[in-house]
Length: 369
Image (cartoon, rainbow, N blue to C red; front, top):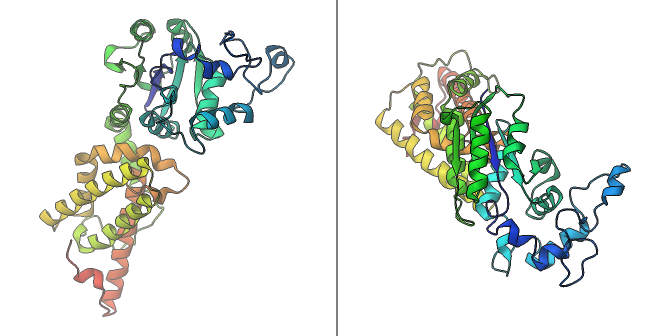
């Protein structure tokens, strides 16, 4: 399975404030042990409040993901339980689009994201905690707190991983951005394998990058093969009476009702991410309905091929969510969609059996909405 590796800066890229300004700010300094107003401490080596000192770490103390002391400062400054982006200084927080981006990629096993920053890893993990990430999600995040970004990447790639199909680089600083691109080229990767974005702080379009990254995953031959393999899934075993040549539109109403139910459940969350997903699902559903209206005799196989080949955006945007604990939340992923289609075939089989017994079923009488 091909994978994508993302290298991103943090301050000024994931957030809207450059790191050189952040670490000298009263808020950042207030997170450090021994803080005294108007007294600048070394941002890199002064321990955070509630965190072990270097000596304690050397004696075996564990580095926590977060502490109550730091979390309380975040909450008092920017809001509890969720950040209030209208408060002064909120540009030091991860932008809302960046939060959505990281939620998606950290839950996709085919994407690895690594932060390369001059800031410190313990501070970044505290910020991720405040912005709603779980310890499990944070554990999947690699942080290189290095001033030499070129060497951080070349060292990381010295073993030349062969399962990476594409790289993504994001940084607001031009010299750092160019250094990371050069590190990839000098590590032996071709320009066609590398994409990058450099923007001013606050101008990064994270949802656009998410779409592009997920499309790159689904466009590969291996991904297509994986999707085809999923069509053989036995999660919802179809009856032997139903063949791929059966008309897909015969029971399309049942399929659409299932998907509409999932859309309503997604909307119930009322978060910006859920509403965004629901909108995409509704657009996709309308397209599927329109296709079946125009092709009432299409087969199940033809319908599946159409969905894979002609609606890659909806499939790819939602693909990262295929691994959620509650897969019904987002039905339109390759795996979930195939499962629903197999369930659809199973229901069609039931209808065939009922018809053989002379029983009528309302689904057979309905037209596609």
